[in-house]
Structures are given as C-alpha cells and as structure tokens.
Amino acid sequence: MNINDDIKHLEKLARIKLTDEERKKFIPLLEEFKIEIENFKKLDLTNVEEARAPFLAVSKNGLRSDDIIENNPKSFLKESMNVEGDYIVLKEGK
Image (cartoon, rainbow, N blue to C red; front, top):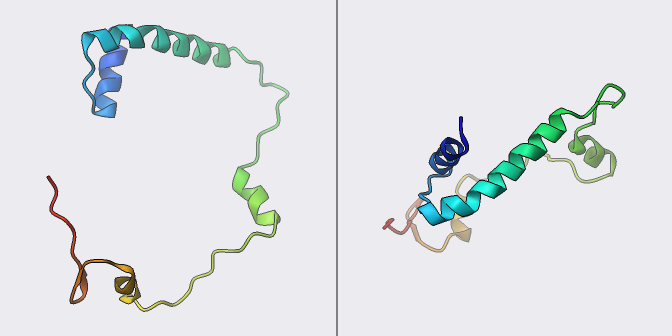
C-alpha cells in the first residue's frame, strides 16, 4: 500500500473527506508515523517484563468498588428535562 492509499484508507475509517491540499500536508506526518512504528518494531524486548494493567493498581489504592445498587428504573426521568409519561423526549435530528 502506498502513502496515498493509506491516506484514503484513513479518510474512509475516519469518515472524512480531505482536499488535495490537506492530503499533501498529511503525507509527511504519516510517513514520520510509519518510521516511528518501524522503530518500535526494532526494539529488543527480550528482558522486559510484561506490564500489568493499570486497573490492577487502582483496586489496591483503596478506591471504591463498583457495587450494584437497586434503583427504580424510572428514577432517571426525574433528572431529564423533556419527559412525556414514561419517556424522555429527544430533539429530532437534522
């Protein structure tokens, strides 16, 4: 895949449309990014221990646990601005 194909692929993933001028500005950034990725691939990780997930440290720090609380399913309606009966009224999309 060449750099222009990469940019078109990223446009599709991001659901955006770039102008030709924007694509020209994006090319050096993407090329630099690809070089950095290749540099990461060259790293020697033979003596590196596997990292622990950050959430494991959080649970040891005494933060609250996520306990299940029994709620009235309709209690959220009190917090809503536009309510009709048991429903929240949303604005129609444009």
